[in-house]
Amino acid sequence: MSDRANPVRVNDETFEREVIRSPIPVVVDFYADWSAPCRATEMVFRDLSERLSGRVKFATVNVDEAAWVTRSYGIHSIPTFLFLRQGNERGREVGPVDPVAFRSSLRRHFA
Image (cartoon, rainbow, N blue to C red; front, side):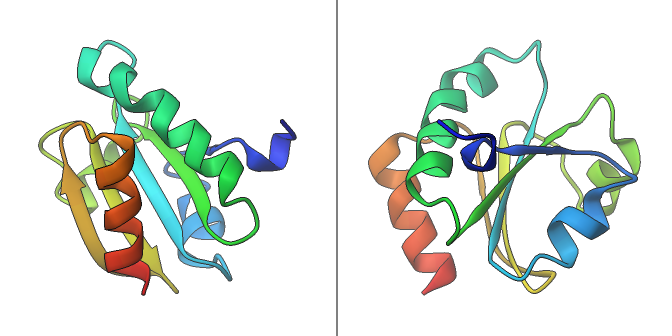
């Protein structure tokens, strides 16, 4: 797996450059290292990042390290997945998701 296929870690300082200005759609995973539901969906997120490399960017935001971005998007539960295109939120999913449901969400929000 190349580094490009891995989700990119973003924080308050890099969010605009990596997510808002991205030329391709972005899925942002708001997570915390201590959260079991977040850990449960990590492999699904990584797998889709690899499969869709170059078509959809996958980014992660640790809510404990990026308070400004977390607050500005009104994240209250984790994991929360934001689907953004050209900086605009197209949708969000809250809670752990299985691979089939996640792919359906991608199609629905980025169709």
